[in-house]
Structure formats: C-alpha cells, structure tokens
Amino acid sequence: MSDTLSLLGLFSSSFLSATLLPGNSEVVFAALLTTVETDPLLLLAVAIVGNTLGGLTNVVIGRLAPIPKHHPRLALAMKWLQRFGAPALLLSWLPIMGDLLCLLAGWLRLPWWSVTFFMLIGKSLRYIAVMLITLKGLSFFS
Image 1: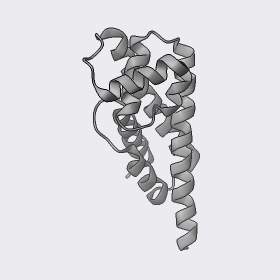
Image 2: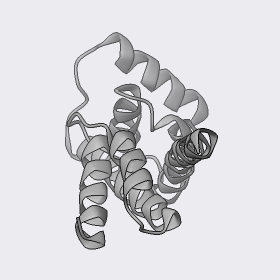
Image 3: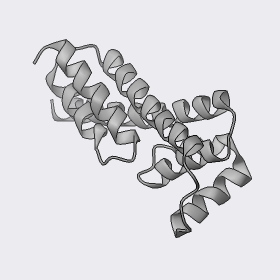
Image 4: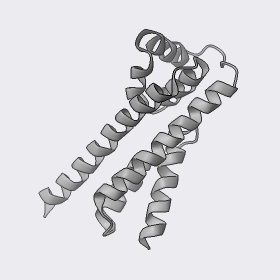
C-alpha cells in the first residue's frame, strides 16, 4: 500500500471513529505503525488531526440539532460539561461518552478555541499512548 493511501485510510478511520459512526482507529493506527515505513510522527499527526476534526463535527451537529431526549449517559455528560466546561473535553476520546461530550459542547455553545484545544489534547494523549504501547511492544518482542 502506498504511503498516501495509508495516510488517507488512517485519516478516514480516525475521522469516522470520532463521529457518531462506529470505528476503531486505534487498531488502524497501530497496524500502520507496525507495517508501513512512514514516519511514526506523521502517522500520529494524521490520526490526531482526523480524530479532532471528527470530534469537531460532533460539536457542529450539537450546535445545529436539538438536545436529545433524556438518557443516563447524556445526564452524566451534561453534568461534566456544566461542572468543568471545555476541559471536560479532555475525555472526548472515550467511546460513546466522548461523542456525547462533543455534541453537548456544541449544544451548550462552549467557545470554539477552548473546545478545540482540550479536545486536541485529550485525543493526542490517547494516540501517543497507543503509539508508545505499540512501539514498546515491538521492541519487547524483537
């Protein structure tokens, strides 16, 4: 597979995984780290940018859509955002709950810059952890 196709596939996977659609970009990211000769930092950057843009898509949807009906996870996400504000988006990488946090951040009209900043930090830390675990695992078995 060419580097361009690998990067495009990783971007698509990380973007879609951050939206309401199901996905598992960590598996794609780890697989590419172990199988392609692309710079791991470039793979990391592509995964982070794609996942952050996908999360921001949820924020936009939250700004445009009415608030969904009551759901236990919705109540918890709303409580976190009302208590912590945009820093709660450090947890935007969590499955399901992270999507709700992003949607509600849009619905609550939290400031774009702080939403983007905290989302970027949270998603970056997750991909950095995946990269370190993957690369350390490879060196352990070498």
